[in-house]
Amino acid sequence: MKILLSAYILDIFLGDPQGFPHPVRYIGNLITYLEKKILKENQSNREKLLMGAILCLTVVIVTYITTFGIVNITYSISNYLGIVVSVLLGYTTLATKSLDTETRKVYRKLQGHHIKDARLALSYIVGRDTEDLEEEEIARAAVETIGENISDGIIAPMFYFFLGGVPLAMAYKAVNTLDSMVGYKNEKYLYFGRVSAKVDDFFNYIPARLTGGLIITAAFFMKCNYRNSFKIVLRDRKNHNSPNAGYPEAAVAGALNIQLGGTNKYFGKTIYKPTIGDKVEELNAQHIIKTIRLMYGTSAVGIIVFSALKLVMEVV
Image (cartoon, rainbow, N blue to C red; front, side):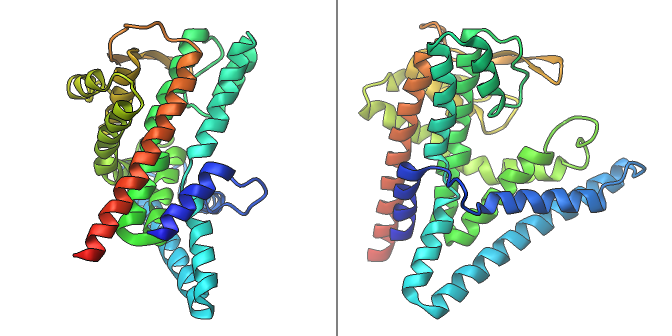
């Protein structure tokens, strides 16, 4: 557990390592390479589904085996080297600082009343169309992104690190990357990316629900509206097209007394989503900062919980 704690501390202080050979980039390159090799325009829907399953299975297995091999080889050379490599690899599976950095860029542009720049900064971290969004909609998109990624980018990697060490945490990142690259319900990926999307749903099932509880706990310690957070999770957790994202987003919405969800545009198509939370406060740029703070609080509660569980298991 010292490796996870060290990786967490590195992530908090350093964030996404610029210039560092980030494993997720290699995973993304592998996905792109395999997609070009196995996805063809003349394939039937059944063939696309099969090829998509092969893609998902191959990428996850290769990622796990490669990470497992690197960790074990370095440990065989030197215990110290193995620890250092494990910490560095584990650190790349977490995204606390990078979430702060990227969403804070949106906040700063809004604070400076540079609405076009805020839309551009937002476009790098969300999938929806941002060209016509106003301040409240930009703030909502940023808050929703942080809320969902508290699970996907922080608690879920911690959870799989706790269960299976660095190799399983990295395999989870492979699943998450697959979903972000091919898990779309458009014409190209509807069948090819379906298995990746379903596997991502499966891997995030427990972490998302755990994240909802951890956000409520963090809200209590941070003097946010933890009672409302609990209420909104119970009431609105299913008001999302994802079977998992509703839990952390509902917890955030309740804790901050805001309303998420509603109308968004994706690739020019307007899609209405049920709302999450009550509109007690009007969303604005400050809620981005409040969500970032809640994210840090939740990550701290998460690392404490996993560390305590590991300690109990070792004693027992």
